[in-house]
Amino acid sequence: MVLERRRLLGFAVLVALVAAGVVFVARNWAVQGGGAPAGATLVSARPAASSAPPRTSSAGAPAGYFAAARLQRDQAESRELADLRALAGDPATSAAVRAQAQEQILQLEQFQQEEAQAELVLQAKGFPQALVLLRPGGATAVVAAPSFDPASAALVAQAVAAAADLDPADVQIVVRGASSGSGAPSAAVG
Image 1 (cartoon, rainbow, N blue to C red):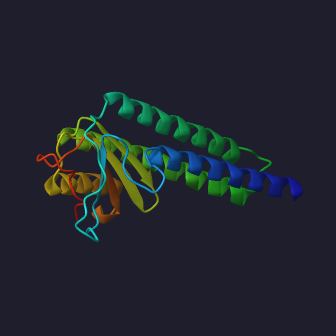
Image 2 (image 1 turned 45 degrees about the vertical axis):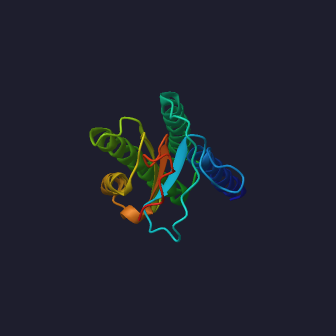
Image 3 (image 1 turned 30 degrees about the vertical axis):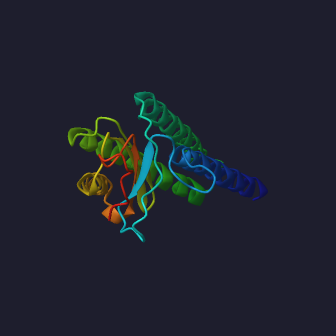
């Protein structure tokens, strides 16, 4: 009984650490007080509360960012899957914990398929550099675009929402290297 509680506690700590790692990957560009990283514009699929534009900079979006972020995401997911599979296959673990681990494995594998599908759709729709990070009830899409307008935001939100069975309003969009064409940053899009 004590061993089973320790395993359950250890599993809970592991899941929390992996979740924190995924959140770190998704938010590694956040700065103190919020805002977008250099070369990025944060665009929301939700209606904007004000007409104030999000923070941005004029720096470009290097392809290396997308490769590194995708690698980091995939490695974190692979470690989490390995840990969950070990837990699900451990006969010393209770049936309830094994079942919960198996459910989490299925959800993570589903997220991986949906992320890959959304990224392929975004690439087919003209965003060759795209990264999608799914979480329960929402997603973050990071795309590289020299310019980004409300139609582009709607296209990205719809593509990710369709691939992940989400509402487009639940898709947060981060644009790297965007401007509105006039030198001003693009605004949040509803």
